[in-house]
Length: 136
Image 1: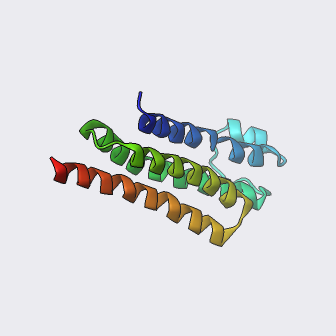
Image 2: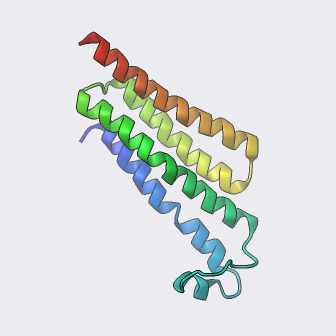
């Protein structure tokens, strides 16, 4: 498996791991464990603000994972991967990990900056795909 596919797998695993902090936040309030195991038809009161941010951090990564999979997949299957995409993938993975931590911690401007770095990493992949296509 290529480094780019390992990065994609790591992003998928990070998405899965980000389901845990909201459970911790919700499970730590009165009635939270019951709420987790039942149908969740009502809002759970008393959850710490970081718990809500953890939900949004997970949702953000889950929403972007499809884009990452498509772009990295196209780069992989067209043979457009190289040292540049590998570096962009590493930057993407680190940026998304930092984004989750900063988001949950509640640091707004840094959160946006780290997200921008991740999105720029995707543009590097796109640029490499286009450059590969133009060269062939």
